[in-house]
Image (tube, rainbow, N blue to C red; front, side, top):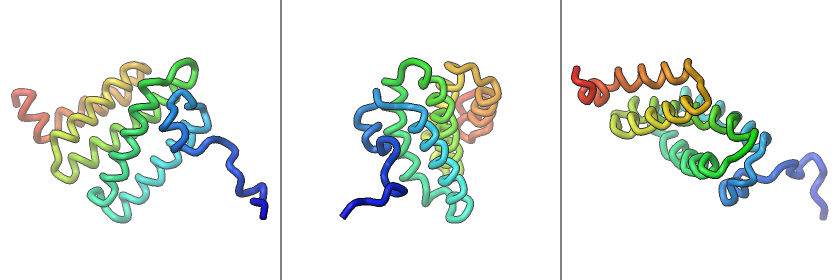
Length: 140
């Protein structure tokens, strides 16, 4: 029995890319962006606590991809990765896990700085400064 062409994969599955980050390509980055959009919609429906485990797992894979990404795709990957990290920072802060929230907002700042995304840098700094833990550590 053959698989109809409409169901055949056109690019490697994300699991293959996570296992071999050097395989990151634009299709992978676009898939990560679509999954992030879906996670954001899901969080709106079921709440932050329910999506935290999946987002953390996805970010573990993304961190590996970022560490190994080179060339033209690195900037696109960092853009999406920084958005994932910002979402994770917000989720963790929303469920009261402030230290984890600050960690992910710090990663957002790192990745956004590398690609010179000043808007995302500003949002991550704002998030860090307004977090209850951020306020405590910033001398307020």
